[in-house]
Image 1 (cartoon, rainbow, N blue to C red):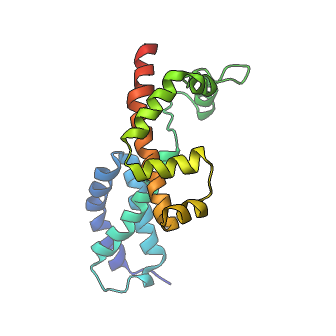
Image 2: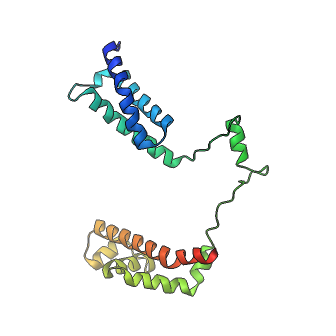
Image 3: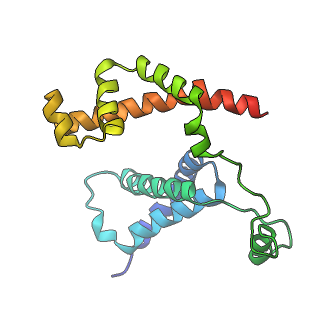
Length: 193
């Protein structure tokens, strides 16, 4: 199938606005150019998909939004390493490792989880955090994590649905994590410095 020159011209006229939109979202000029190019190629490769139910600009912008979302997701998973002038990709990678294969920069120590659990103060803080939870959330958390009851038993005991139980457990875990981050781990980080 041949692509009409009108479609090609129209897409080229949209390019500057699409690039500006992508740059605003991605904050990276070259990545923005790439996603715009991908969106335009998607239209050019399958022009029959454009049914004319909206303007071409709206159609291409819709494709571009999906390309931007894909780019944002992939950049979260990737660690970008910028090469200095004259460095090859291999040189950049080699600079991250010692000759024995270990990394040059070691990750920060997270502490010894077993030692943390053995400390009486940790359990005191955990109890205080549990007391601050809504009573039903604290109860379901204790039933699941300390008593190790399965979800069906908990639901039967509390007279709630499975989905309600998972929501309550999620909320309890989030609130406990926030409380422990503030009252325990936050204090530990300040003491370590």
